[in-house]
Length: 190
Image (cartoon, rainbow, N blue to C red; front, side, top):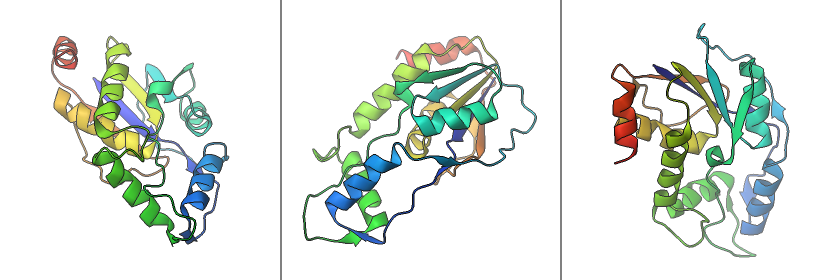
């Protein structure tokens, strides 16, 4: 059995170098509705039996480009929100620092983030429990930080594949499982 993970295409939305917390929040809101820059994705000849996608516009657009059948959109595959870790009208920080600090705040369960690490992992497990494990090749199109977290759950379930630190846009990451599908279900409900 094989699971393929694809991060949505790159979003066509430039950003400034230095931003206040409000500018970062505004950019994040615009990012949710911005268009994508399509590119060819190497699917390595795999015939995917089913495709699940985040219900967000950029992920669905990507899924429709890489999969020819019906795409099943699911809000459980949405990206983990990344909000400013601190609110200040005067503090200007580099764009990437806002991202990194927001992810650290997520990890340390800061109130600045709508969802913490525990909630994200529960959401991933909820999604994995509902997919059709009878299929042999399952494609999932989602978002960078969520895919990073999905891979760790796949490793816990016994899948083998590349450990990815930075999930790139429009790249297929494949994970294989050689055991019984019943074992996956058992592990998911522990």
